[in-house]
Amino acid sequence: MTRIVLLGGGYVTLHAYAGLVRGLRSRVRRGEVEIVVISADHSHRFHGFTGELLAGDIRPDRLATPLAEAMPLARIERGVATAIDPHAHTVTYEGDAGERTLAYDHLVVGTGAREPVAAVPGLAEHARTLRGVDEIAALGDHVRSTRCGEVVVIGGGVAGAEIAAAIAKRGRRVTLVHSGDRVLGAWDDQPALVGAAARDLADAGVTLRLGVRVTEADATGIALSDGTRLRADTIVAAVGERPVVVPGLDAWRDRRGRLITRRDLAVRAGVWAAGDAAAVVHPVTGLLVPADALWAIKGGEHLGRQLARVVAGRAPRPFRYRGLGRAAAFGVGRGIAELYGIPFTGRMAWMLRLTFFLRFMPSRSRAAGVVADLAAAVARSVRDAQAQRRHHSYMTTAPAALALIDRVEPN
Image 1 (cartoon, rainbow, N blue to C red):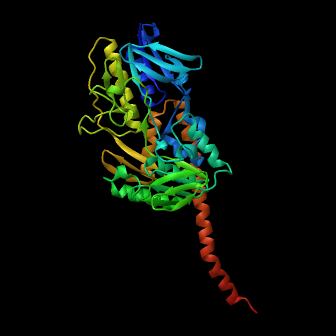
Image 2 (image 1 turned 180 degrees about the horizontal axis):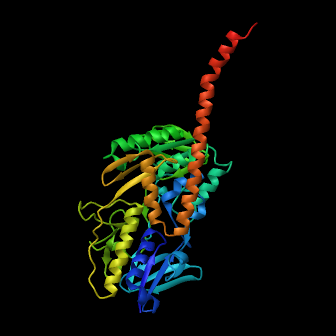
C-alpha cells in the first residue's frame, strides 16, 4: 500500500486531495493507496469571504466545510504535526489520543502560515488574529458584541483593508494602521485601483494612519513609531504571514522559514510543499509567487496531479501556472480587481471576485448559501440607498417648501 500524508486542512490539502482522487480513485477505493490528512481543525475554513462574514452579510457556517465531508475517501486525523523525519519517512503528530508517529511514502506540507505577532511587544497577548482555528468566526462574534468598542486594524494589505471596511460597516469606529505610505502596497503596479480602494475605505468610515509602525500593544491600545498612541478596545493583527514550521526539514528552508521547492514542487525525495509554507518560483518571472489563496489552490492541484503520476510510475511535471489576477471587496458592490492585467472597479470588480471565489468553494451547497446570503445583502443595500435618497430629497426640499408656505400663509 502507498500512503500519502497531507499536512494541514487548508487550500493546499483540499486541492491536492482532489487531484489525487481524480487520478487514483479506483486504487484508493481498493485500498492500494491511502490518503491521510493531519489537521488541527476539523473543518476547512474558506477565507475568501472573511469581510462579508465580519460585516454580517454571510453566515459563519457557510464558510466552514467539515474535512470528512470535503475529503470522504481520506482518513482524517485531528492533530498538530510536531516533527518530520525525512530519512525514515515518518511524521509525528500530537492528536486526540496523544502522540503518534505515522510512516509515509509521500508527504505534502500545506501547513500554511500565521501572523508574526511576537515581533511587536504585547501584540500576541492583546491582538486578535485570523489564521487560527475558528479565529475569524470568533472575531465576528466579538464585533457583534458590545465589548468591541473602538477598533484598530494593523496591516494595510488586502486582508487588513477588507476587515477594516467590514467592521466599519457594523457601525464601529475603525482605524487602519499601515507602515507604508499607501494601502495595498503589493498593488503598486495598479495605482488607479489603489486609489479606488482608498476611496472605498474612506466611504466606509475607516480612518487611515499611514507611514507609522506599531511599536507596542496593551489592553488600552497601541503605541506608534511617531510617538503617538491610539486607544483601542479591539486590536486586529493582519500583519502578513510567517510559515508554520514543523521541525525536521530545516535543511530545505529559506531564511524566512519557507520550504524551498524544485520546479515540480518537490522539496526532496518523498516531500512536497505549496502554499504559504513554501517558496515557489514563478515559471516565467523566476520570482517567488505571492502567498495567497489562489497560488495555494493551484499549487495543491498541481501536487495532486503529480503525485498521481508518480504513484502510477510516471515522472512528475513542472509547475506551470502563471497567474490569473487578484481582487478585493470593501462592501456590497464595492471592490477592485485585476484580470490578466486589466483593472476593474465597483460592481464589476465585486461580481468578478464573487464569481471567482464561488468557483473554488469546496461545497456546492454552501456556495449556494453564500449566493442566497449575498442576494439578501444586496437587497438590503438597495433599500438603504433608496431610503438615504428619500431622506436627502426631503432634507433638500423641505426648507424651501416651508419658506413658500410662510410666504403665502396669511398672518
